[in-house]
Image 1 (cartoon, rainbow, N blue to C red):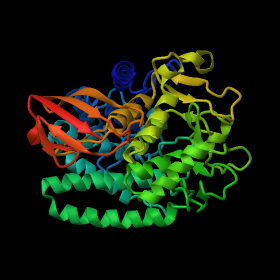
Image 2: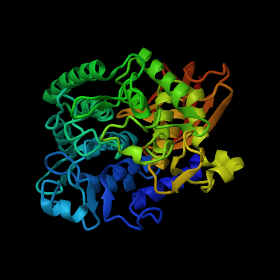
Image 3: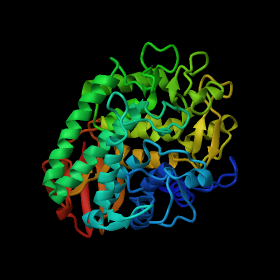
Image 4: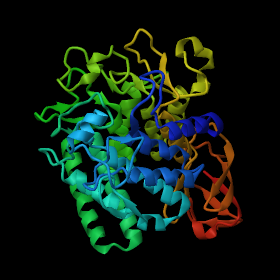
Length: 475
């Protein structure tokens, strides 16, 4: 599934960027910003330079205020575009405002490219903004941070603006999304790594201060005993709190608290246990629970869907990749693989009459337990699931995690696996990797050898790589 059909699905979404779909309207009038930047991530390890060209394109669709164009026209002309601040843009695209998360997706995508290739010079490449002017990639990322800082809600968290990833959750222009806050925290940590590598002393201090400030704010405002809440409406109402009668547990804040590095070990364990106990099903984890029905606030647009469908407690497949990654980052290989298998099309051939979709491509969502069609999947091919699951499998389960100086090898696998082998092309070298699991662990480290040389931990510095590199990891 991962090597062939998942990769093929990733290239389909990479090329089309969910811009054409007979399921919906036949053709969009442009590229969705967040969709396109997310979809790049699934092919970076396969075709990094192809991915880089699309990254350049999306950076050129960033406005000079740091925000992304919600919809990038097919006729995109960098340096000469109108923006959501212009009535002409709103009239032509139908997008009335910036989205809180669009430009924040640049950070993990740019980081994955630079880490995969070692091409730090990319950060100094000059790229135009959508409307006017140009700047280095590094400066583009700084502008994205500033955009969030210039749009804060009453509690000091990034404001919700038009919407975050969940288009059916409208917290209001001054509402605050915990998901976006965690993305912002993650973005700060990535920019801090870049700043450190580039010797940006003043930025290092600035980013260290912001990381400490926002870690404290998010923890104080969003941790609710055993889960992270979903956010605040602009009227100040808490969404996703444990005491709420509906939608009192949301998936994305729990997985992203782990991915972003925000949650401590105890919080991560408690929140992810809630996900496994409350949200998980034989087909994957639902987006939230219980579904909206009688207690939806005005911005909870998901209530227009039947319970168990799409954003109203459906199993939104894109989120499963983040869930796989989050559990793998915690070293929970059994759960990571369980979440993969539950949502994998190839694992559902014996339930084809339930699932309905082809057994080789992901769908946008699967109907949840609250639906009478529990298990039926919808909207095939053009879904961000392909990319998130690819990242969850490659970086998470297989444990291939490049950074700026080399490659960390930290698989998270089912304990019954005795081992596996894989080949990886990395920075002009081919790595032949053998993982052995004689102690039947889900993760861990006993020894690592590279070309016969034993290393002190599970990290391979790029300087040790040869054209053909033999790697053996014993968990």
